[in-house]
View (cartoon, rainbow, N blue to C red):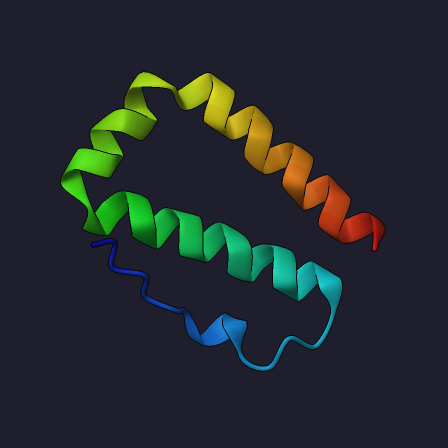
Length: 62
């Protein structure tokens, strides 16, 4: 099971920019707290980074 640790920046979600930071922090925490998942991410780093950037752009457009 994945451990998702929420950063204090997640509360409150004042602006969409803050929300983007929150999403980035959640992704970071998933990567750092789950070794198997981290190695999977590392092997697909470029693809994952592009997907995160795309999601962040979509969030900021909301």
